[in-house]
Image (cartoon, rainbow, N blue to C red):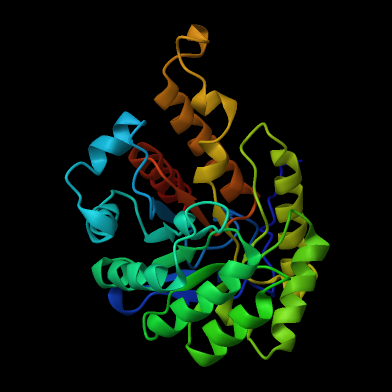
Length: 313
């Protein structure tokens, strides 16, 4: 008897979150099918690709990255150049230097930097913090105020600092926030519940459920995303229907395969190509697992993942 395929689509859908303003704004989410299941039903908003830009400047040890940003001056130049990267949908500025355990750049300096970046960005802007919970709580509040009207995404708010960030960013200044949890569906849902109890609607929130480089515990990431999407669509769980944004670059470029020299392990081949391969593999895996947007670093990776998405839509 012939096989008859039955499309699997749901009455529930992932909430839409708009980042940026005007013609270049991007909309995340909105689908009512499992990740990349465009054969079951048209996907309203395809997954998006972001370009990571560190406030410390590009990684000059990677030839392709160094060449791409050659001649770009200051944060304004880097942001402008990142916006020209083929395949880029948005830009993600990482405030690494704000970390109190590192350079400890002042909040005032970080705010000025973000204002300069926003003025230079042709694409929507996502801002990642220092990973210090206390500093980021104060930092994101000031950034949200300074960039009022830009509709930026502040990635991310954790359980320890979500109140200050959510109230300031969303309710006071009209920005979007990311709810960051550590690869656990229960933690992700709990944080979304806490944020919703503050009066923040799901259309202002994305999730960062955590990630890992492919081959480095990524199976936990994949299973978490799979459970999140299943609960959101099949069970109509409103507290898990926010789109997912996954910062891939730092994980992919930090593993052994991306940093060990060719002289040390010649059979592995060129270091840069290994880093690109890790970034592409991790991003593709995140998208197939359920991410609505990935954040990458290398121009080759951005172009490859953008093509990957377009050919599956």
